[in-house]
Length: 187
Image 1 (cartoon, rainbow, N blue to C red):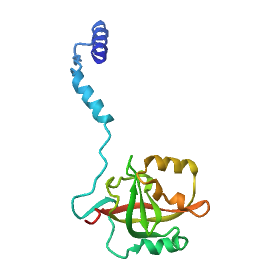
Image 2: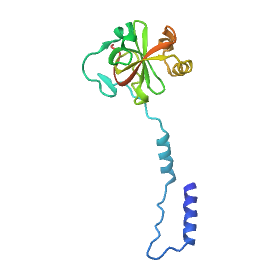
Image 3: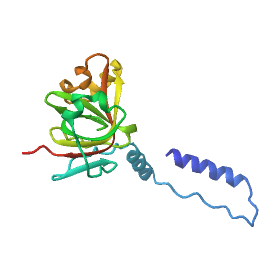
Image 4: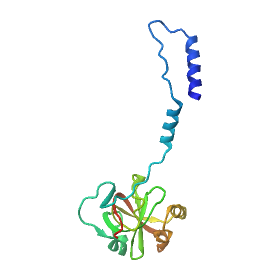
């Protein structure tokens, strides 16, 4: 209705101004209210989060080249040795962000590490918990921020697996991922 009133006002204003005969006055295209409403709804609609394929690997972000894969156990045994290195790490997924699928947690024998998708550049499979993941990214040592931990808790399906709660001291390790592969849990 608002668009109709604007078009009507423009028509009235234009009719009071006489255009030269060499320049024809073009009519404004008709706007359908229902169509405008549909476009607004689509723009506001949130895209669905990715889910894992029925079989095989789901791939998110940059492709992971075949090659050496660092077992998560090796990384967790001495994470300080890998800081600022780009690696491909494989481990079991124990939690995935339930709001935007922008992080996941890998676990090995009770030890965990958080994986953040670099710059929120892509989302991973929200249903990946229990499966195996390969992560291509850079290891970072980060100071634990209580507000950020609270934010992560609000998105978590498994708060007990939070690496920030397992940290010794005020530093934890995170993988900043540029590519992730995930597969469903066996069985």
